Length: 223
Image (cartoon, rainbow, N blue to C red):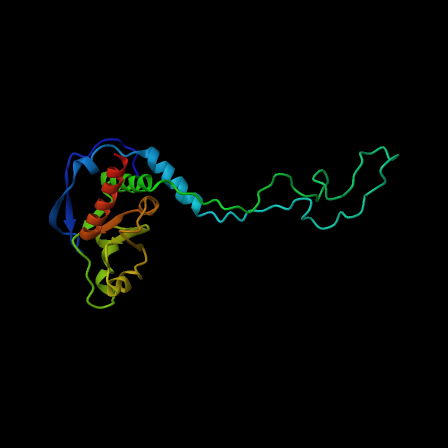
């Protein structure tokens, strides 16, 4: 995503169909979609999402976990050496570790208002970079992938992209889930990490309205 802070001049975006042809215009609220991208909030949100993906299972063995070392290696006195009670002391080779990582829960959450604001900023960045595609609607009469097989070629999608749906039917989900370069996501569950991790974001008109209502809630709560 570009780090430019310029505000897009146009307050309208095209609504396209499955063939890429414009079928209408959507007016954007400048109070929501105007202004520069807040990279600071995005950085905080992405750090949270990436940290929460960590399993937290990294572990090292302390001297109590290392096998062996039950016998005193040599007598206490008159050897000219420092006294030692175990060969598994951290000072010894093959000894236990000191202050090494231990299993822990790394999960944390930012306030909901910040997460929603980060979603807005990520979508705004895609909009500035012309990587946000608003589609009229996606309808499948039968669970077949063939009607959607040309989407990647039509919209020049070469890397992983995401399709955001509002309330998709089971038939539509079955039709889209086999597309190699696309992943499906609902408007209710989309987050900033999903947006920034995608090359392009395809949003149906109804899903975009749902997303807009979500990000407006964050503005209302912050005020």
